[in-house]
Length: 489
Image (cartoon, rainbow, N blue to C red; front, side, top):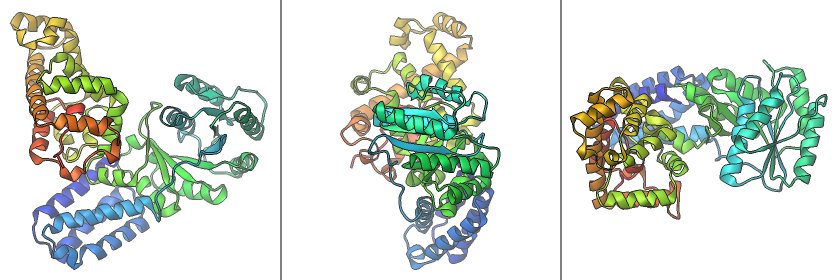
């Protein structure tokens, strides 16, 4: 999401921050490039014009021209205006799912990913908020639509309304309401039927269901790949049905992201979630501040921490920290780090959330450092004996040949892995001595988790960033270790 826009803006601001003093002409020239970048990212023309106008007004004032770091000041202004554009007049509130059972209506066109998104939202409400959720398919038109939702419900451990053939959408909605009330459910999600285009039949059916259950939330699911057409769909649905929020799907497949940038400004409706993959856990809350940070290459530390919390248990993290503080880091530890990285979205996913690392993605890809390489490294470690994993120093020529052959790879790849392991062990030892690992773990698993516990990304220690970059280019980023690259406050 936003890769193309992020790359273009990164180039513009790199030149701007290196210039030192800035004239108004420098700022105007930079903003012309920003304007082109936004339009190429499929942001609507009126939104782009308004955005550039607001930035230019602030960026050509005395606060910038007399600033000690004028280039960075312009970047800050763009960052703040991006947040304002994505957030609108006020920040989006949490989903209104109090006073159970709370009905949530899922609407949208056919093919937008509505049924999958319903399951993703149900899983999120169950796993993260401890809600008891019931899902019901109101799609009586698409073949096997109801069966699809039932299968997804089984996969994620969420109840679905039993299928009764021949009922209308309104009848199914009323039955879902009754079962949710009698069954003690907190939330019931109604997956309505979609059409290939907006028509009166679709709208009449959705309106009838809406009137029958009086939903607390009406979430419009739109395909982010459709670009500005997604914005038009949102405006149509809101005008006829009334929506309380938007869910943008397939945003992992669109490097432009213009729909997200235009949606709030054009419709006035908040983007609640974004779908970033096919798996049922690939649904993220849309946070304007974090999204603006990603667009400008500032990373998303909070998302990185949340991902780490999902794949790493507290007890396991504490055991790791104690080992690393003692300078202990063997192949079992390395394998655990590689497994975590794959679970957190792979090398590209982790780098995208780390401040300053976005610029390195092309270099990393060109050097062949990708998820396939991580899997090859795991295969090499799996080919070792317990003794070899615990003490890789004993690996001599004959052992190396056996391990490489067992993994179906060359000895040269094993040698690279061993070199990487030594570098990581040194890095862990350094961070352990400076107390950075302890600080990182407390940030992830302490009382104030996530955003409240983590330091300001602007407080990154440049030396440690460089060390981490060398590690990344050496083939192995450490999800646990890299989260510790912060100065003590």
